[in-house]
Image 1 (cartoon, rainbow, N blue to C red):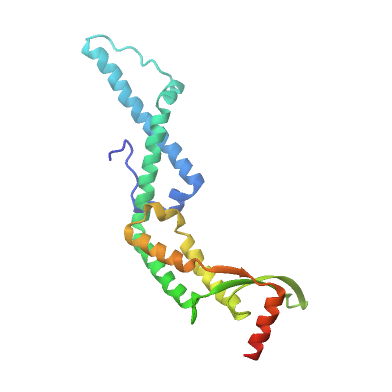
Image 2: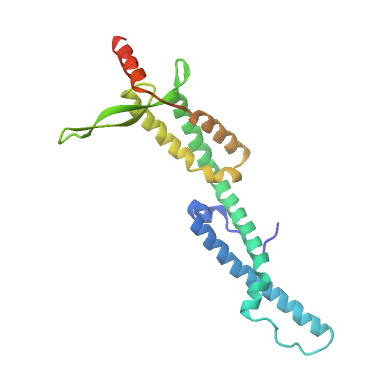
Length: 214
């Protein structure tokens, strides 16, 4: 597809420029101004040609700047959005190698972290008394999330969440990913889909006793 303004190449773009809401709208407004200028130039040439073909003097262009914007705004905005979409595609395609490597590494880590001998593990939420200030020896009761066992599972869940955070950075890229990256994204997302269970006090005490006996 041909555009009145050439979309920027992937190497010249940062993800923030393409996907941050404010930056994206600023780019659209910038493109609208550029496209309106080109549409006005095209319209002016057509306007002048009409009179030249009749061998008549070309009068002044009849529209002021506000009327020009009103006339071409909708068309310009539509084209601007299409250009931004192409720039997003260019940005993601340029980073496809990085995306693929990151997702492959995330999949390897998640496979090691989320599977137990019984299959995929579970994230538990339980009420625990935890140290909140080691200097003053202050403890506080609060909800604690952990993976499978407490307290070891707290650190494990932190590692899992760190990997999930890396995956989530690509959420905006999904509509623009190639097939290979999409497949890796799906695999990583499936691994990241971990069940969460709230543990009541009675179950928690029973589990802790069982673990102590083991």
